Image (tube, rainbow, N blue to C red):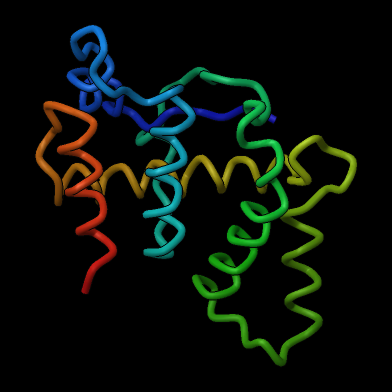
Length: 152
């Protein structure tokens, strides 16, 4: 289960990553990935291969996110059902999507296709963030602007 960072996200978050000693920072790149992922899932938008870095940045969920694997998988299934216009009453289509996206034998409970889609949602989420939020000078600036993405 390989996670791929959205293209240009490293540059976008550079000021936060290089903040002066003692200034708040993200704990990991996965925190940045996760914030992008949430925006992409909420918007029901996916990016393409050209929107992602060519190489993985982490294998599997970091320790702090391992307990959230089922929630993330559920959010992915929900977003895909909605993005594809599958009705809640269409049990056969829901089951097909779950089989396509989930794999209970994998550490994150996602199939290879599920992981690929997760990366595509993160890439689209980053594009939305980049289009709506100026590259942050600090973590505080980013979090205030990010919160604004969720407020109608």
